Length: 136
Image (tube, rainbow, N blue to C red; front, side):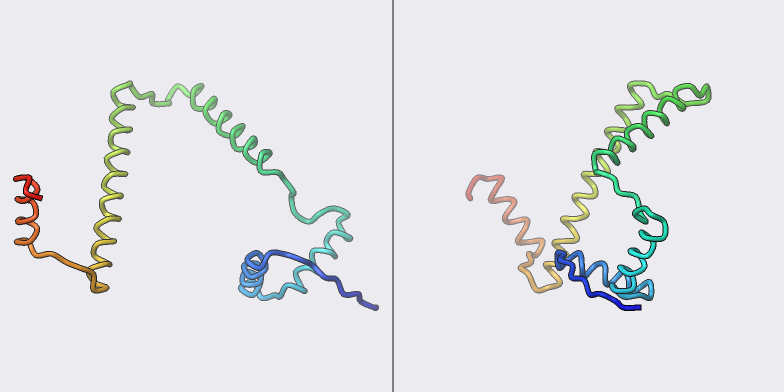
């Protein structure tokens, strides 16, 4: 059987990511492309699903609506009061604030460990006094 060479143009990042994944699976790009083309000929269809992003989004929305309808029809579904909903929102907001603070602390610690400027407690106290007294 004779073979033909083909040339494919693709973004560098996509090629590199695909090659890395294929290596993990024990094959190279040529083997993957050849097997995909053989599957196309054998099955007389593209060997994977082609969908648009909008179609995928519509499917997700439809699934979530169907799930919500099922939950609404279930007599065992626990419904939250307005107060419980707001409490959950406040808890979520507090959690997000704590995560932001944690991120800032980790950043400050990384800066300190890499030799960044640090302050003693005395220096911080003095700076705070100056700010409070308005002498800055």
